[in-house]
Image (cartoon, rainbow, N blue to C red):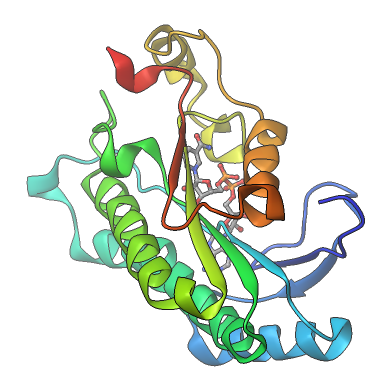
Length: 214
Ligand SMILES: NC(=O)c1ccc[n+]([C@@H]2O[C@H](COP(=O)([O-])OP(=O)(O)OC[C@H]3O[C@@H](n4cnc5c(N)ncnc54)[C@H](O)[C@@H]3O)[C@@H](O)[C@H]2O)c1
């Protein structure tokens, strides 16, 4: 957002020179998340907005053969981690009585099943994020903290770079015939974080280039 001071909390440092302040954190670890959020509050004074975007997807595996360790790792990062981050920041925002949170879900949660790749853990984790957002919105909205979700279709990010052989299949299944850009997803997050979306609460903004229409 224009003029905003941005802190990047991640297990890995940013790959670009975005200028964000980087704080290493593993979102699966409650103490590590709480320490990182304390550090941001100490440094910046307050947190006005959060984009909870940590996520990974498991290698495609038929559900009947999925190892429970793979299931656990996906749910731990994508759902537990996003919840711990929202909870830590939400506590701070509720104390102030103001704030806006956006969680990154996916079209693969509430709208489609990833195809042809079989990814039951990823799909389930993202449906969990969507449900979590609605619950947090209902609980926290009346106390001044808005919570919403952005659910992208395929986005041209490192998450997809190791799957180049699938790109033609995925773009063909997308009526706009391309992936979203990270900038388009960032713009949607920025709008939901800001006051122009002030009446949005528990909204899930689907931006999938039309993938779910067919
Ligand atoms: N790329 C897509 O097509 C697509 C589509 C829909 C939704 N999404 C979602 O968008 C979000 C961002 O993904 P992306 O596409 O930018 O991929 P990405 O791999 O570039 O970003 C995911 C980030 O999560 C971080 N992360 C992973 N485990 C973590 C942990 N334990 N603690 C802290 N950080 C951790 C990674 O280091 C990485 O920076 C994810 O939630 C993803 O599921 C992506």
